[in-house]
Length: 307
Image (cartoon, rainbow, N blue to C red):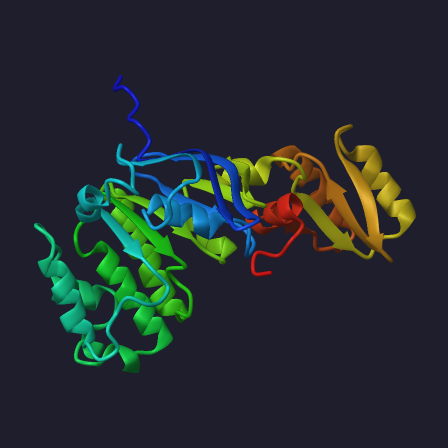
């Protein structure tokens, strides 16, 4: 059995302040090698400041940050060839053509990906001769993504990688992130899309008020606390009482509106069979309401992700 590898990113008791405002408050998190980690948090929660410290753009006032075993603030020159960073905007000369920009970035690396092939992969081949300022917002996002990965980084930070993309481009970006993971690249991304985090991430870190309030796989987080439930409408209270008598002791039925009910409990095959059989006998269609990552987020922070 091989020994576990050290974390690629290790943040310990990190604190960052802007004047009297505490943006990050003794935050601790770790990112495993070869994984996809999604960092979620409402606006102002401290996630962007934390990632900027990991990228070497902000100096910790307290605590420590280690990236690939190095200090990103002091060892930026050594880390830059090994780390890709995707920013939402900025850093690109408005008149430069998309293809020229990507080829320029590729030329700065020892073993870059083929720029033209990557342009095709992110759907920018036809826009290769288009100046950056004339690209749509979604095209600018895709160029930023290509610039972050063209150097074959060991670790890549992606800031809202699918913001402004149409569904086709969004799925293509998901595929590219999946390919990076399969190639052993460690990915840290921030996103406002819960389905994106749920689909892509091996680990989710939820940040609020400058601290980590939860961390784990999407499945682990969704399994904690409230449970999945079955919902149905129509039967009378007397009929529902008959169903309640058939359910396991750990389950129950609750009326959430006029003739509108939910069955709550551990949603296993036995419970599902009891309820669906009971509903079928009465011509009622039950609906499974699955607990989502967004449900978890709202319970933890009390806020919408975009607020």
